[in-house]
Length: 185
Image 1: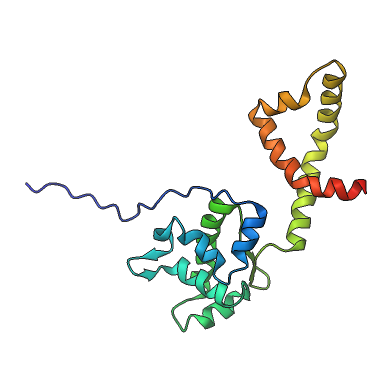
Image 2: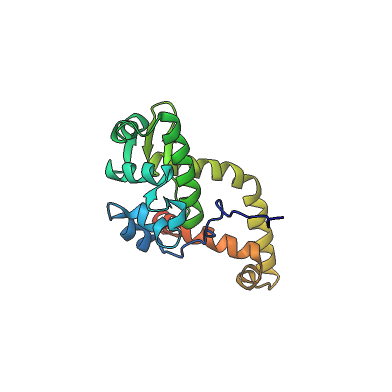
């Protein structure tokens, strides 16, 4: 009896986040093929099958060729008959999974217009409003508790640095620090 053969056709390299500062990411994205380069750096097999781009890789290649701001229809047209609207939308979804896991970035697909683009000011504003709505419920209680802890001689910075939740808040404060400086001025 022949031995059972196992195929690993779906195995891909693990997506390890790239540790890039905002400035490093901006520098990488200034390159016309920056999004592809970020994925191809350590995860070629997610965009390339054999010697050719897979559908997600081809969609990303066309999006970057079109300047990272285009419509689904423009990508289909640029694909010379190799793509459909459905395959472009699916490709954008796959690319978003890769980019989000690597650098926390996504392409935005506006369903009403079919527009594909990187995050813009309105996206950032919407995320800020959603965050503020969720955060405002617990913010006052958190601030009062930490102020009371500090008033009783507690080390808030040490407490936050020693906990996983505190480290997550430190990430948040890194993002919010420029806004706090601008408000203070």
